[in-house]
Length: 210
Image (cartoon, rainbow, N blue to C red):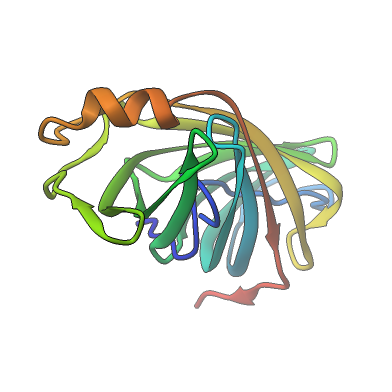
């Protein structure tokens, strides 16, 4: 569901990512009976990967969301789609590395709007491919090099956010170790995996989903 295009360790989950990430706040008081609101948001954002010290540009992508209203707010479920990202970072501050990063959601992002604030969680696998060192030497990691368990991203709305206007959401996440990377997982994990990575997404004005 989630693919990224720009850079994870430099410019792009993680998501995804991640993720991602459904955010809809500022619902009016719900009617006695529940109703569904379906909209699609344009999405872009930035993630900071702590281990590499690099910023990852996310998107442009989309978030297809359904809000089920209830007294005082609503429940949210959505699917985030991002193009693949081209990451770049330096090992030991000297050796440049480039890679393609893909966020693969393991399920829909879910959340709740309560008292004008939206909180949500998205989970996805983070996949690495097309890794090059110095732009010259390819690293053959195979086609299934990804995190050994899903990345979980918790997000919360920042400032004004409305269902029909969009807004910003932010959070933090941990990148698990990698597996199925031929002989290179023990090298990639120490370079990338770890806690305290941050993400901020901006959801633009949505269009209705019939």
